[in-house]
Length: 166
Image (cartoon, rainbow, N blue to C red; front, side, top):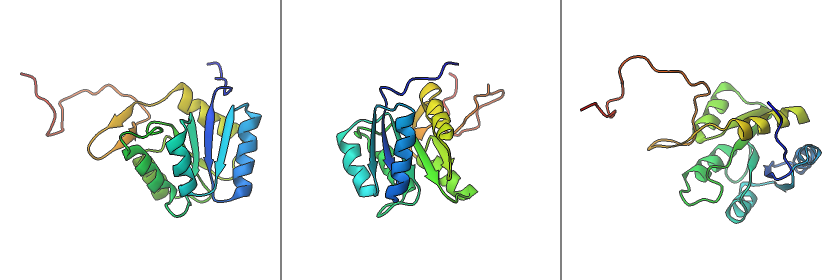
């Protein structure tokens, strides 16, 4: 598979550390991303997310006043949101399994553990751009399909609300 060009990609970087945000911005510029916006808070992110359509969002899990998971939940639940279906790559310095599961359940597409290198950023961007998972809208979840593998189901439907053949 050929690597996609990032020349038309706009990325929002949300990290509470201005130094880390600038470092990630440099990584993205090295990858030839067209536009990189860097903010340090969930409030700063909210302003940009309402005014500009991004191709990807890289967001730290530890933000203020809202944490990264809460921001993603709000983003995904905004039915008229400009960036509702924009791929989100969550970043964290010390995630545990529960943090990763919470991010996935909030609607995060990919996860990056800090520290990381430019090739890690590139691989996550390639993943969300070349093989996007279907966007799901259900009562209890809005976001990319949480299943990474597609398997053909053999057997009966187990959900009680499944439509039965006539």
